[in-house]
Length: 443
Image (cartoon, rainbow, N blue to C red; front, side):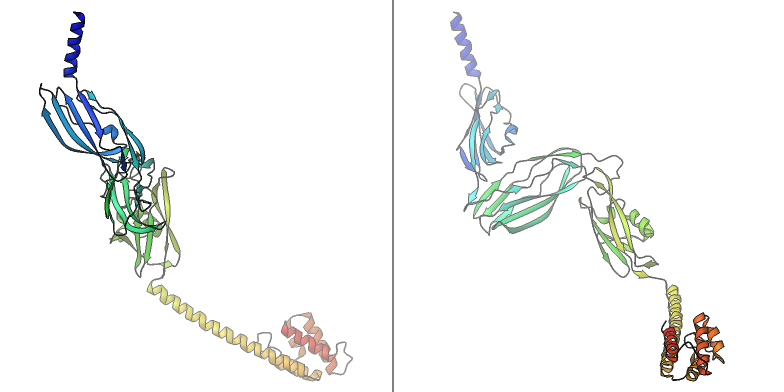
C-alpha cells in the first residue's frame, strides 16, 4: 500500500515537472557568423522571457519570435529560436539557463577564426584603460582587414549612458600588406562609476557578409577632486597660435573636445601674462582673438594655462609662448627717429674727424721719415705736430710741442733735436729720433 502511494506521488510530480532544452544546430562556427539555438520548454505554466544575461560575455544573443501552445493535458509548450554571435575565437561553454522552474544542460561551441584567403578579418578593438577620470577623454580605434578591396565596413556610433562618443577617424589603409578599415572614436566619461563599454556590431559586407560582436571592456571612472571648476581641461590641452597684423588667434583642443572659449582659466591666464583686459579677448570661429598691446618690443610672453593632470591626479599648467611684434606708438617712433638722425649726424662728424686726423698722422709720418736734418724735423713738428694730439694749435718752439705732449720722452726728444740742430754733440742720432717719433705716432 505504501509503495502504491509513493508511485502515485512520483507520477503526479512527473506530470507537473517542467523541462527546458537548448540545442545548437551545429557545434562549430566561424567568427563573424551566427549559430541558431533551438529552445523548447514544456511545463505547467506560461514562463517569463528567457534570461540570457549569463551568456553575454561569450556571445551576443538575438531572440526571434516566441511560439507558445497548450498541449493535451493542459501543459504549456514554448518554442523559440536564438541567434548567437560569438565574441571570441576558440572553445566556449555556454552554461545552463533556467526558465519556468526548469534548467537546461550546458553545451560547447568551437569558434574558428574568420579566415578569407589566409587573412584573418576579425576586427581588433584597442584596449581601454582600466581607470580614467571624470571628464577625461580617450581615443579608441577598431581595425578590420578587408577580405576584398571593394568591401565596406559599417559600425554605428556607440551609445553608452554617461559616456559621449564622437567619431574622429574613418579610413582604409594598408597594414602589413593588407587593406584595413580603421574607425576611431573619442570617448568622454561624464560621470564617475563603473562602465561596461560595448561596441555596436562591426559589419563587413561586399563579397560576403560578416557580423562581429566584440568583447566588452570595463572602465572605472574616478570622480574629479571637488575643488576643480567645471570647465577645466581634463588632460593636457593641445594649443596652436596664429599671428596676424592685429593680434594672435589661439585655438585650444582639449582632450574632451572643448572649444577654446569654454576652457576654464585660458582667458584669465592671458590677461595676467599680457596685460590686456578681458573685454578685448574675442571669440572667433572656434578660437579666441587676443589683440597686441600698444607697446611691445618683440619679446616672448609665456601664458600658463591650467589643466587637470590625469597622470599625477592634480592641478597643473601648460605653457603657451606668444611672440610679440615690435610695436610702438607713433609719437615714440617720431622721437626715436629724430634721436636716431641726431646720433647719425654726430657719428658722421666724429667719423670724418677721425678720418682727417688719421690722414694727418700718415702725412706727418711720411714727412718725418723723409727728413734728412734736424731743422726739417723741427719745422715739421712746429707746423704739423698737433696731428696726433687732436688740436689745431701750431707750436712756436719745440718746448711748446713737448709740453703739449705731456710726457718725459717728448721732452727728451725735443732736447735731442735741438742739440742736433744747433751743432751740439747729441746723444740721440737723427735716425733714432725719427724712429721714436714715428713710433709715438703709431702708438
